Image (cartoon, rainbow, N blue to C red; front, side):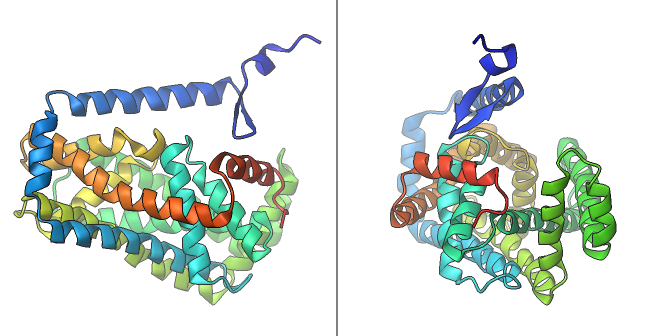
Length: 344
């Protein structure tokens, strides 16, 4: 039988079919990331980077790596708190699932690691997949709310670049709408279900609403929201430590917080695996804003990306080996589970 045009333009990504829109998005995001990376690498000499690496203060680098690990321990702590109304999840299990997901995000497109960590938490904790998926949606809203508050504080003291401010305004609007939707679902579950019944995916939306209600009506919900603040703030520490290690000692912890805001805003939209290219471009944008020479900023962006990525890759690879899965197998299984929100 002859395939339709839509079917012929599909490709498989971990067992999940992508239509032409997905293919186009994949190509455009990777081309954009590649373009930014080539710009960063232009005029950067490997010999200069190697010399600077040898001259770095390795005590600060060790502290940067340790604090980078702490970032995701705090994320696991928050996740366990959020899921507490559903099940008692050990901190180590949440952290392990997060690190496998982070490793997948570094090597796979479209942040596939988010679905993978959902699947692992669901499998290990014998939880419905939809419940775990809902918890990640709540996490994202928490992150957005705190980032908006964080940004609102920063702009009181720092005149951020116009592109950053515009991105912040867009994020404020988006987070505001999502927070209102979340509050409506939690407060008016019956009405939310009635509205969802008219949607094309009404059954899945109803399950999603019930999952949100289960977590949103508990004390743990607000505890998890509070735990999101130290998680966000901790992301500043690896950047600050690497600045000190590199020799940019004129930067304060507050300056590093501003750089963190710029990076978080710029990486909200999925890019190439590991945010390669986009991350470096945002670091350069931030450092040039603070008056650092562009070539110095480019070299530093490559170094700081390595400092925050290498511990993640090592820990993620170890966590993956413990699962007994191969990454591709895990991706395919998680993608299949994602189409069945009630899977345990």
